[in-house]
Image (cartoon, rainbow, N blue to C red; front, side, top):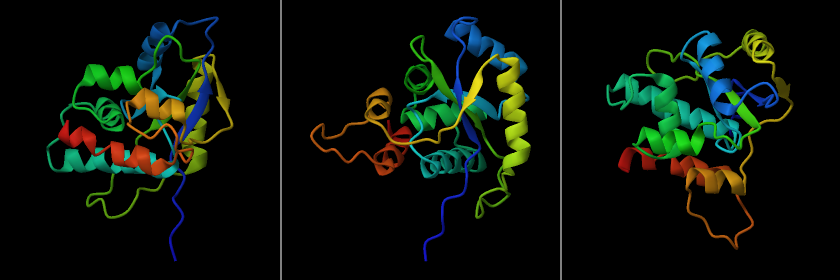
Amino acid sequence: MEKRTPWYPCWGIKINLEEFSISSFVTKFLEIRPNNRWLLISKDAAASERHLWHVWFAMEQKYLLKSALSKNVDAEFIRIISGTNQLKTAFSRAGLNENDTEAWLIYLPIAETNLELLPETPIVEFTEKAQKITYIMNSSIITERPKPSKNGLERLGIKYDEHDTSINEDLFISHIARSSFS
């Protein structure tokens, strides 16, 4: 019997564009976040809980093997989810752009020593921190979970058959392997 994918610590947020431009929103977030394990990505960049766990695992594995291209876990996560080795391209794909009105607030759990088990991510503990961040940022949490979308495929530069109506998380998961080859 297949195990269900556990909850990934991420929250959809609505950005208050009356108070912030995207660049000032990101700057403020970088100032107030508890550490670099908290990051923001485009609402279109995340396709599912499983997708986020795959990106997280690839990132943690690269640090364990000392093959990460970035010194910062947040930048490495964005690089991997974008499917590229170029940070500028990664941030334009998965980072926030001036047209974004929603984003994912992501927490990168700390890995166990051997990566054989996913780390415990208590919903209440992390949700309280996420609520505090969104309160300080004058944003609001939206009640949605990541899902695959055509916008996500296009934003991340994932090639797909435009006539195929079945957009699924597997397209996004296979895309993260590109960051190792591109």
